[in-house]
Image (cartoon, rainbow, N blue to C red):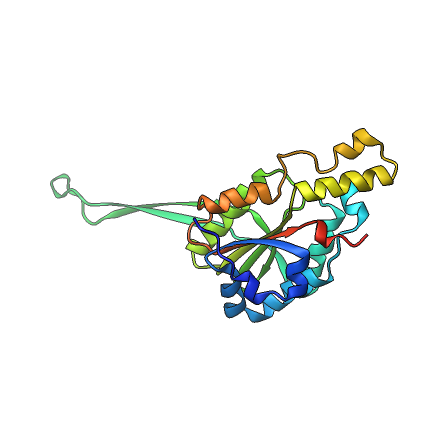
Length: 227
């Protein structure tokens, strides 16, 4: 699947300078056209966010401080964590066999409930997750969830905010050395290739994992750093 570049026409230059982007099916254009308020809230969150030294050299826990800052920026604008659960009801209808003296049909019902994955931020018809430095399998989970939500007409597009790899790894190494971490510890900053980043996300988009769901990827990069 070819990537599109409608984001160049809809995000302000100040945001385009500080982040990298990838999209399918002109996701930014669809976002801006179908939900202008939520698009402006995303733009505001990106404009106000800054990558700082501690984001790169301090290990994160269950939710890094960086992800918490971004999620809080959306929550304060009305976005909410959400989960879509599904219920499936099956009805078995048995037809009567007259020679056996049966009259009328009989029915038997079964019902199953499935809890969906949580989306970090949900607003109107947009789903958005922040995947700063998680296991790259989270990308498969998120994209699969967006695809299902789109196919069931619950969202118009999905968005993931994550990071680049090589430039931030180099920046983190330099900052780690300057902060006295030592060369070996500095080398391990954002060093693993099995965590969420643009190199893991873009191939999933180009091979069509999102199906018909328009998808917008936003990558925090070295240009986002302010010191």
